[in-house]
Image 1: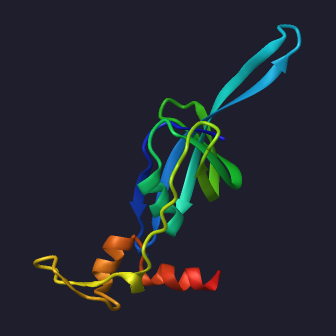
Image 2 (image 1 turned 180 degrees about the vertical axis):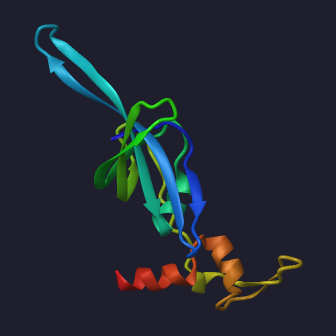
Amino acid sequence: MGNATADPSSRQHEDGTTTTIVRIAVTGRYYDSAKSDFTDRKTEFVSVYTRRALARNVLASVKKGQPLVVTGRLGSSEWQADDGTQRHTLTLQAEAIGHDLTFGTTAFTRPMRADEVPDLNRDTGELLGTGTGDPDVAEELTGSSAEDSVLAGAS
């Protein structure tokens, strides 16, 4: 659990998949019996990586400062900075992300499936009827491609 430190950023890969990264600040708390009060631990920053449909939904849903609950695989990365110091970061390959409802409310909206997108005239935007629609328009409106529909059916 933590708060988004910035709006998510997105990268498009050569294979057509999308990765979205959002950093969260996590501050644990504990009860200090000497003070008879709760005390904050050190704030840790975690880079959360998402792919495919989850990545697009995070990009559309998460904004800076929002409280999030994330599940996934925790890892770390180490590297040497330009000044020669050793650096590290915590990473999380997210399996699921949601808003922490302890601090507010949210409304869930399911994206349209590609087969629910109506046929549109690309020049005028006029609705031509229902059907399978133009795949490019469907991806633009739903945020999902035919690859995602196949992946969703497999799960």
